[in-house]
Length: 504
Ligand code: SIN
Image (cartoon, rainbow, N blue to C red; front, top):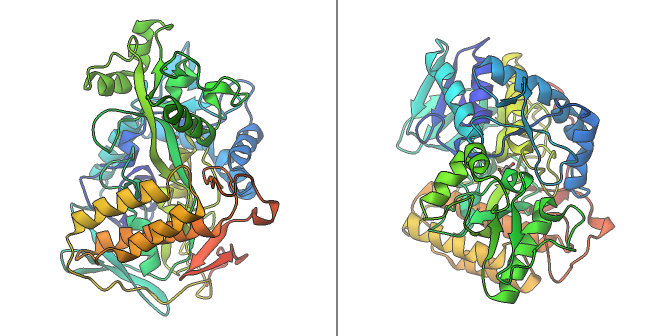
């Protein structure tokens, strides 16, 4: 069984279905979710002069000392094959003069991001894969049903329980539920990004990892309610520049890569300049050819137009927003969690690829690579050994509070206390405020609350600044804390050196 139907889930399901029957359970329509909103593309060393090693090095540098070298090497090595596979499945990547067109994005040492439909990569990828899945004789699809619990006993997974009642037996379950952006009041993620995967994994007793590492995208469109539209980093890659209200370039003197510096650096610079001037930072593309801007970025242009902004001519107001959670269920490079029979792939998992800061367009890449790798493991009969770090499955006692109200309160608390700039006082206050919230009646809101609590706890425990995790009371990295933190129950530990690949 695969839970979720973005790039990770569909990649896994299609590959498993070459060998076995598979059922996809998805809480919305097939393919609805974060992937279909992805603009930038998929990073892969397929351009002239590029190498897998250079891609892996950029990934490790962005990861700020916490990214796992073997994950970076394995995922970057699989990237060219993923692009070829997706093309074979029907994804029409953009080409320029007979070669695959590659965009430049932040913290990449050269253009490396394959895209489709200009900035509509996610939509194109999902359209191709969802069509294949719907037509596949060995894939059963259950839409608009939410999994509330993965059922486990001492031997591991044996099925799932659905939110509206009923259980489905399954001895191999792949979590591919996407992100957790709605932990925060401002996010670029679609409404379904509610931390379901980490919550399901935790309830099943699996260890989580890197929970404090949340990436805030520097340039969400500062217009309308959350979720905010994304102004892709590829727009800055094509020449878009950030200015304050006095016309001063925001990134001048801040980072050697200027507007294409690492996301956390640009995001903090945007927030600080907006705070200093009292006005929003804007992105300008007015010096570029307007026809080219509109043809290269049709999605962003349409999103801006829906707020009366001409992407090519007007100053585009931007603000950081929660974009990607690096943490999730601890897995190995086959997607195995610490619970036998449970895999996790894509944003809900923590392989170690991203460390403290994800390199742009490595998110879709990891989803596709790990979807494939987990599928091969599932199909070949692998299961994690039963002695990995696990806790007893956590059960949340339902309360009576309205789930939507609790979700709204969580977002506000997290944005204020556990956002882009954190400190001990704010984090402790956020934990108190989360603990004081009434217990929600629905399991999804209870899961979001549990993951919010753990994220804040993890952020409080890391008394240093590293990558996306910035503590104004500990503004520098501390070499003694240059390790990932794993959570089984409420106890933080270093990531265990268990060999999840050993078959039980
Ligand atoms: C973007 O287009 O800026 C987002 C790409 C990503 O998050 O990797």
